[in-house]
Amino acid sequence: LKSNGCGPQQPMFLNNSHTSEISDDELLIDPHCHSRYSDGLSTPRSMFRKARQRGLHGLIITDHDTVLHWPDTLEAAQRYEMATALGIELSTAQGHLLAYFNPRVKQRAVARALKLDDGCLHYWHVSTVIKRIRDLGGVTVIPHPFGPFYPLGSDHFGEVDGVEEYNAWIFKDSRHSRNAFGAGKKHGIAATGGSDSHYPYTIGFGATAVPKNTDFLAHDWWLKCIRNKATRPVVRQTIAHRRINYLKFGVSIPLSMRYNAKFWRSKWRGYWRDNYRHLIAGGKLMEKIRKEF
Image 1 (cartoon, rainbow, N blue to C red):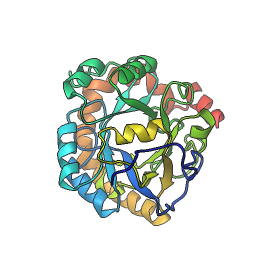
Image 2 (tube, helix red, strand yellow):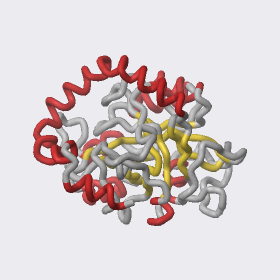
Image 3 (tube, one colour):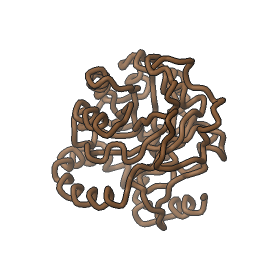
C-alpha cells in the first residue's frame, strides 16, 4: 500500500469527527493497548492475531514504562502482515503520556534517555519527558486526558502532537471521567482513538482511522499521520460489547493481578500515596478536569 504518505490536505479527516463508520478511503489502527510485558493479559503475538481477526490494519502496543515488548511487537506485526510502530505509555509526575517511535530507533537509546526498565519509575515532569521524546525523533499523545487513569488534563495540549479523543474504557461520560471529542481541533493537534485494551477480546473497541493511501511500508508512517493530523477517532464499541466486557473482565482480573500486585508494590506504592491518593477521593485535580470540557 504505497502512496505519497499521510497528508493534511484530505478534508475527510476532521479532528472533531467521531463515528462508528469508516469510508472506503480509510483503514483502522488501534494505537493504544497493553500486553503481558506490563499489565496486559496476552502476548504481542496473540494480540496481533486478534487484531487481524477484528479487521484492523494495524496495532501499536504501548506497554507501561518499558521497551521490552518492542522485539516481539515487530515480530508479530511481520508474522501477521500488519502495520505497527513502537509505543510506550509513560508515567510522568503529572499523569500518563503516550510516546511513539519508528521501528528504526535504538531500543537501548530510548531506555537510557527515559530511564526505563531499570527497576523503578522516575516520574519526571511531563515537559521534560516530551522534550526527550522529541529529541529521540518520537511524537507524543495525551491518553484519556479527562479520564480516571492518571489524567494529564489539558494543561499540556500545547506541548504534544496529539490527544486521544476516545478511549474505549470511557464509554459513557460521568461525574469523574469523560472523553475529549473536539479537543484535537480546538488545540490544533492530532485526534486519535484507542481501545486501551488489556485483554485480547477488547482490542479494536476504540480505533483510529487513517488514510488508506498511507505508505505503511515507510518506517515513520504513524509519526507522519500524527504530525500531519491525518487521523480521527472511531468508536467501535457497542452496548453488547460493553456487557460482554463486564462478564469477561471479572474472569480476567485474577490472571492479570499477578503482575499488577508486583507492579504496585515494587514501583508505585510511594508515589500513589504521595501524589494520586486525592484522585480516588475526587480531590481538586478531578474537580478541575471535570470543569475543563
